[in-house]
Amino acid sequence: MNKSIILLFSLLLVTCAENISDSGCPVRPIFKPFDLQKYLGRWYELARYDIYFEKGCDCGYADYTLNDDGSVHVKNCCKRLPNTTPSCTIGKAVISYPNASPIEGKISVAFRGLEPKESNYWILDTDYDNFVIVYFCQMDDTQKPRDAFWLLGRAKELTAEIQEKADDYIERYFNRTAIYTPKQKSDSCGAE
Ligand SMILES: *[C@@H]1O[C@H](CO)[C@@H](O)[C@H](O)[C@H]1NC(C)=O
Ligand SMILES: *[C@@H]1O[C@H](CO)[C@@H](O)[C@H](O)[C@H]1NC(C)=O
Image (cartoon, rainbow, N blue to C red; front, side, top):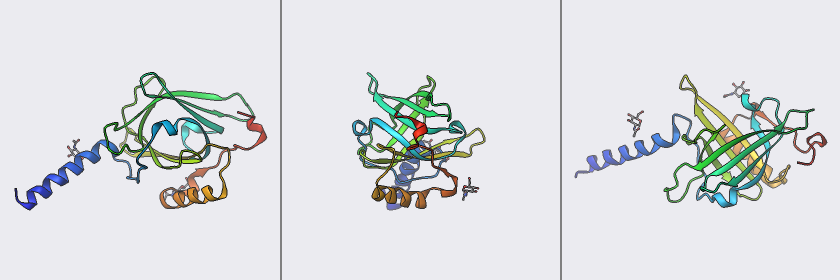
């Protein structure tokens, strides 16, 4: 094969590989290698785009646990203050590309009994013990990307050092004016 044919083949491979993952949404650097085990557990919502399905939500948290089949049981809760009863949504998540090497922080999540199909929950950065930056994106009915952003923490507040790191990320990849900082430490959230 001559060089241009080889080049053509590599381009095709790259194109095909990208189709699967980005579904028309903006490309972001993805965290890897990703360790699902270390990612499980409780995360508190510290900042987000104020998207429609979380309107009025404060004191939010997510609990990720393993299902018997190796998928992840997702329980997202928040409180619509002053009502302090958590309102929760249950979902299921899987690693989008389990055969990738290394495993990327690309996750497919679906709610209300649906099977996760689309790779839509992307981990951009995490240290597992303090923070994670998540980018969520789906094409809407008009083929426009609808994206969401979450900064989650293991605690209800980040250390100054980690907050600075998160702020750098937000500055670089997200729209700061679109970000909502939910009540989290406030007494009205309660202990949970
Ligand atoms: C990838 O996307 C391109 C352009 O949208 C399209 O022509 C091609 O068929 C897609 N490939 C796969 C494997 O879906
Ligand atoms: C950033 O978010 C604000 C508030 O939602 C919006 O008005 C503005 O158009 C956004 N800017 C960009 C570049 O998307």
